[in-house]
Image (spheres, rainbow, N blue to C red):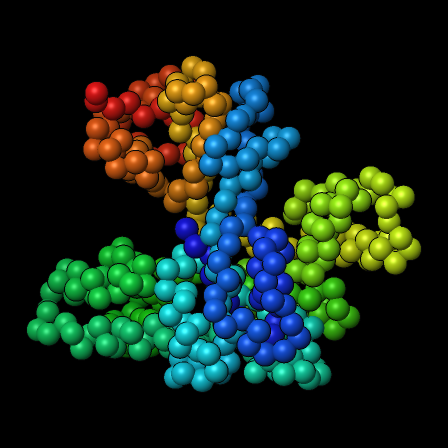
Length: 384
């Protein structure tokens, strides 16, 4: 799974990426700071099932801290867009090629309205325009690719053949037959731009991070955007504040679980200006619940993609692998994933040798078509 960090240039995309991954990247108040994509690992945080079972985890592919499971997801932060990017303006073509494999987009918007459509400093700019033009650029890019694909379809006539051929042509965009079939139910292929917009929304949904919510003009703009884009998830966000909190936690000044409030643990390490800054951050968290960065990741994975978390184990009684690691793995999978599909996700050989699965809670035997539920803990049984 890859989360694509999108948006126009100079809105805080690299700051958001750093806040989510704590990887040092170049951050600057100028256009096109990011040219080559930044790739890193962020984490979605969920309540681990260890509390329910009364066991202590020893995670291998993910970490459990105080009953919270940190599950890694890949993030890619790419060059910013400007209007006309799908035609090659700015760094548009490079940006669009870099995000082909993303499963979901987080669009970073400068909620303060202090940068124009091309990322230049301004005043009283409507950030709602950015939501429209960035999504439109991506949709038009999809349309161009679909038009080229249609040109290679020859005399294909039946719907099944159209879907199969189009899926083959669009495989580089990580678009499958199910996505195409769903889009064709809503728009004919002949209406290419409308079809492209629909298939993009289905295959690569997008939420908006209303960044720089800590700045004075942002509140009014945020309320306006929520009213105008009622069908879009818009999360008030301050990437700069998230970076500050994580650095303060690393320095031992505060206790901080990303996505939550924080507590000062050692005031002797905090100077006057630092304390004032933390108090300002606390006021924003009190108003919005968090800095928004962690919430964006969670909503992208669980709300937009509809994923769940499952815990495969080798011993359903000890909840461990062969080495005794308790609840060693937590996997993020799409809702509707079957026991057999999970087996293949773990390893091809396990999928090929699949016999059945066992529910660790009920000890009930499950067939290959069993649809996994959130927080399932299961053992995959295979042939020798």
